[in-house]
Length: 291
Image (tube, rainbow, N blue to C red; front, side):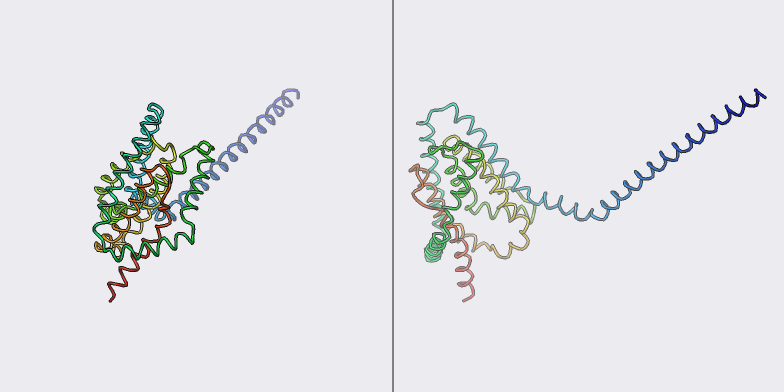
């Protein structure tokens, strides 16, 4: 009798252990099935959106030129900042004035190839619109905002001047448009690489004189040139060779203004207010072509 009680007691205990083991196994399987279901949902989502992901990756490769140019500006600006801490203010001022004179020559050479009537009309209407919209003041205000966030907040800081001067200098030239179109349409970065080398050298001189604000212009260059690359197929019929020649001439005058400001060390000419001149140049060109 005692033996039977012992046997049934032990059997009952083993039976409970078996039941618990089965429950644990089933629970593990249930959790595994949940993980399988979640993994399947992730795979289904990826498959459904693979075209969108591919297009985003493709768009990223379409703006290779903009990435190269932005990185070149950052690299050149970084070298300039290292030099800035090792040379005195007289030398940096001399570098800035020399760079200003070189920029003036570049601007003059670009301005000589355009239609003088188109140039004068476009710039006159452009500066009128720019003054009304206060573009230069707004661009400088944005530069001051960046200065407060990332630079030294003092009256003698050249952060905003460096940002504005570099942004205009890198964006108003014809190489930015032509190079971006070639990069977006044919994947040819030769013009952009040449521009990047020029911009990198310019960034060294500007950053050594005007400081870290020059590096922030890389973001504007990336957005501006990247947009042209992405929409290159739509813009190629708009920016004909003849139109680019006229835009180069108008931009040359703006570059000349930047050079004068750099040479004098002050913002005597509000170059940003001239930017609407590009739009008027395009309008003037197509109105003339339609006649």
